[in-house]
Image (cartoon, rainbow, N blue to C red):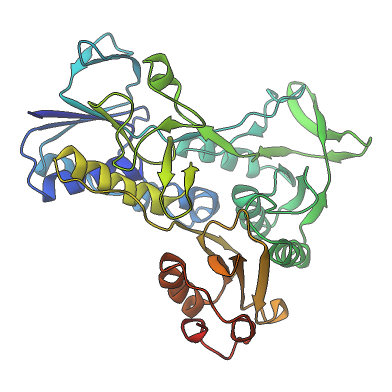
Length: 405
């Protein structure tokens, strides 16, 4: 019988699990351990409104302090779990204490990848994952004139748009031939590169960073393999994230690009579950294991894990969706486009309102939308239903996406 559930990690998956557990009647002991000293908070605004100063700390919080008190959740914040003793079912913390559990939920999230080049540890070189990171970046940007961003994924592009709105000179260096190359079609990449260029960002693709050089311990120059160099008062490294699965690995749980879980969010130890960015889980829809870095997946998986912990068999198999806000553009990606064999554009990128539909053997597997809310809402239903749209209708933006079957 499960009397005490311990949750390690304090992000979206953890909060959703807590909310679901209490709403569904779990009356046992519930303990949350988080490494940061503050209450759990949203991360998407960190690269946008919080970085610019348009949003304060309080607005970031998922829930106020009384939410946890009213639900009898014991919070251990500013504490890190060093070891999981699976045999004794105890978690050992960095303050010398330990917490026993009947069931454990790992919601440890992800960690930014470090740039493996000389000079990466100079002052003024930043990663962006938490509030403390952003506060350090803001402090540097207050006196900076030039920002170099290494990596043109979501974080790099979002920070570029925020920094331009703050009046900074921005150079964006991307190693691959195009921005957002890991997640979108060339049509989307070309559109966003053009938009950033119009807003004054210097975008350079095919740039392999070899070293960071500084003066008096502070970064001053980014040097690339072709001999080019770029002045920088501040550098942001945004070259992707990896799963926080080191705790699970040390405990002997199966891990492969994340903590391996089944469709019920259960790890290789039946007493331990996992949810969110840290997991590698089976996607029934796409027929393979995936690790997703998005709020929607953390939300859905946190809910599913909670229900399974309560003994209500609940498979996690939602079609994921992702979003990114840059300037006045909202991109929403529904589904996973990897492996597509045809991409059809609806509308014109010049209008700044269009979509790209990805097909594989005639099936709609994903849709990227830019400022197209009707398309993205229809896409959620069509992708989940494995729709096989009429190609001729699909390319006509005047025909609603929902009517393209």
